[in-house]
Length: 87
Image (cartoon, rainbow, N blue to C red):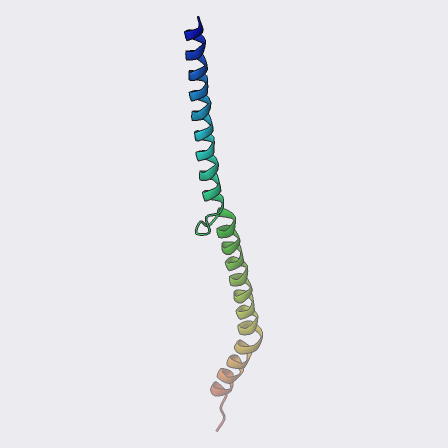
């Protein structure tokens, strides 16, 4: 009976040691993944894309306003002046 209890205690000890080793390995793996500076998250990429879209829209709106109100009327006046030449 004593041998049975010793075997049971040894098996429980080995199982506990395996659990502790696996837990430590999981903690180390999680720590490495969290502290990895090379990885780039989905949120970072999404923010970059959003910033690029907003800046592109602002640039396009600015060019549209510039061409529509400043450049095109001047070009139109000069072309009409060329065709209305009475020399």
